[in-house]
Length: 325
Image (cartoon, rainbow, N blue to C red; front, side, top):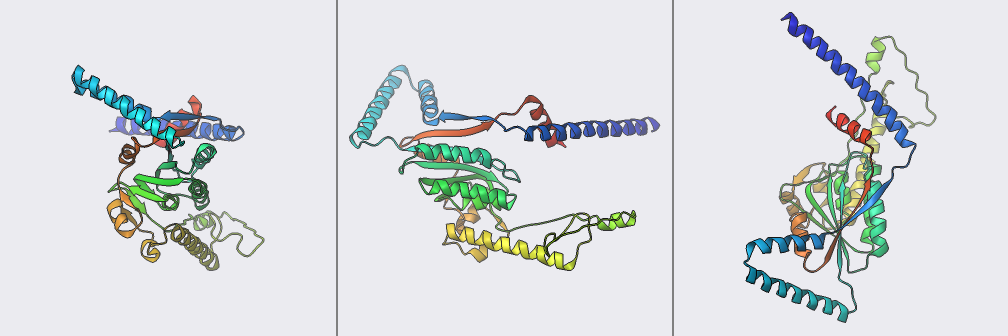
């Protein structure tokens, strides 16, 4: 028993030391990284070409040599007819641009999103379309408000379709509602049109330890709730008032983009699965991003665009550790 107690104590000390070292390095390198602009580059993929190549390989396995030869001839013939049609109408083949947004709490991914959108807008025409694969449980109001504003830039020029395969809740739905058309998987999580705010307070603990905190402000509502100081009833009321005002703005934004919604029913902060969201008018169709791409692969040139920010090896290691912690 004494051995296990000693071993447990040793293990606890080791974990504490390792945690401290990782935390120190994380702060040091994150501070260093903020001094430099993160550089990245675009990854552009011709998805249509990949689909065509994959289909061709599968057909080669499925058919015998003669069947495959006939199939290839018919494919080439169809391609020529399509090219001639585009030439006669003097219009290029319409494009479906695919972008992705997997959002964190502060919506920092908007930095890549804005670059992708600007690039698309520089070449897109009216008959083109953008498919955004959206995945986010929400986060800060200003972060997701900016992301939604970026999507409004797209909507002004081309059709914007948003696909929710897993989740678009709270700030995620703030983005989704901007779309001209929303599709979602049957069991994806949609909605949560509400606002939450929470602030821990250790004032009573500090008071027991005979630690005094001085908090001075200029302006009646400069600070409502605090982490260290003593919270007041007027501060709480103002904090709740700010939450309600933000909620009203959120509801108005959703209503503007989806006017047929019964906003009072869907803005309670609840979330729904895709099937239920369809019944309430939060989405337009039950489907997946894969199905939507497959529907368009014959009629449109499909291009995937991603702006990838480069991260050093040490940053990647620190990210893994921070995820574990």
